[in-house]
Structures are given as C-alpha cells and as structure tokens.
Image 1: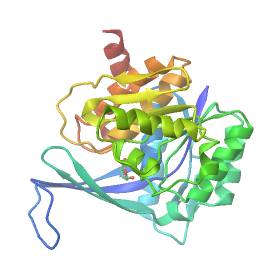
Image 2: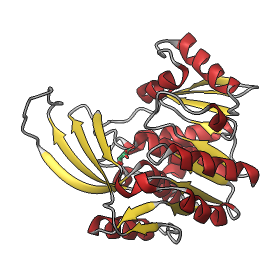
Image 3: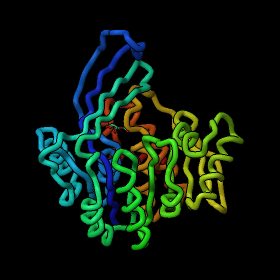
Length: 304
Ligand code: RIB
C-alpha cells in the first residue's frame, strides 16, 4: 500500500502580524520564519508522518531552496526519485501572513511548480503502477493535473483532488477522473457557482459535484467540521476543538489524514475522523509541515 502525491512544493515565508494590513498600509509584524511548504509537499509529509509509504512527484528549482526542500522531504522518508530539478528556474515560494486569530493570507509564486508538464506525468506513470492512491491539488498547471488523473484512472488508482487554490471553473472532463474531491467552503462555492451559506446550500453543492461524476465529495468547513456525500450516504462530521494559533496547512493535514486512513483500508467515516483530527492538530502549531501530527499521536486520540 502506498500513496503518490503529484503537486507543488514551496518555501513558505511566514510573517506573523497582530492583524492583516489594509491595502496601502505598512504594519509592524511580530515574527518571521522560513519553513518548507506547498500544498503537494505538505500532503506528502502528512501521509509520511502517518506511516504511509509516500512518493512525491514534482519540480524544485536549481537553487538553495530547491536543495533544502528536497532534503526536507527525504528526512521524512518520502521517495523523491521522480522529482525534477529545474536548473533554470527558481523554486516555488509562498508569502504567508498569519494574524493573531490564526487566520492567514497566502500569495504563491509557482516558480518550478509552474513548469510541470507532460514529462512529469511520464515520470509519475511509473510510480502510479506501484500505488493505490494519487493525491492532487491545483498549484501546478491544470493540464498536468488532468493528465495525471486520467492516467491514474486507467490504472485503477484512486484519485483524490484538493481543488486548492480554486479556479473559477474546473474542466468538466476532469471531474470524471476524480474519485474524491475535498474543497473547502470557498472553493466549493467557486466550483458550483453559488455561495455555501447554510446547510441547504452545502448539501446542494455536494449534490452538484456528485452529478459531475465525482464519487465522494468532502466539503471542509473549518471550525464547523466537514460535510460528506456519496450516492448512498451523506452527513456532517463534527469538528475537533483545539486551540488554534496558525491555520496554515490545515486543509493539507485534513487531506493527508483522510488519505492515510483510506490507505489503511479504513472506512470513509473513519477516514473523515482521521482527517478532522489531523487538520485540527495542524492549527495548534506554527507552520504547515512542522505542525502535522505523527501516527502515534493520532492513534492515541482515535483510541480514546
Ligand atoms: O496549504 C498551505 C500551503 O499553501 C502553504 O504551505 C503554501 O506553500 C501554499 O502552497
């Protein structure tokens, strides 16, 4: 059993401030730190920390960030043999502002992630043959995401898409290759074209995504928990209450938790519980990967 993540890897430049600045305003921050991130790499670290055999496929630049980012993945025992070092490009970076409540804003400069193309999908193909779950996000070109999903589908590999950051629209053809889609409320609203403001609109959005051909819809609702729907069952998942200090990577943690549980052949409901716990715990520490919990922590919480 193993998981492959095809996606982005960034160096996160995180500034903490008492509040978000207004347009045109300068404010004094309280803390700055540089940490490995990127939605793809965060999800890879999440599954690796939860004991899954994990492969990461993507691109770093030929710079010192690229070297550090790769070394970091390797320190988590993630297989990086299919990561391409794009010598003439810089590595992806994310400028992150976290304010006192733990809420964040993120600007991603894709760098090498933006060059991902068919050649990377060809390197991914060899790994897909050895795995049962492919995790995708949208910080790399959509064309590569769609090609990867199609290849995985042909090989019978389960495809889980985190549509983040959300585009205004996803190609209809992509939905038919996706088994599990995991938008948050804002992302789901963009995909379906109406706001998710109450229970009815959340259910309607999930139904809408099921109609497009996805098998399992999981809408992440932050502090409200999550909502899931399949053709046969649906329901809300209770939130896990924690003391939030930094929400960076919480969605990635959620996805990693769900994927790790499914990789262990646990049920969808159990996987949602894993996702909720991992996502919540990720908000209790600074940064994304640094905050992701390990298997021992999750097992203790699940068994209590
Ligand atoms: O989801 C959090 C991630 O979004 C950060 O690590 C940042 O790199 C951006 O990709």
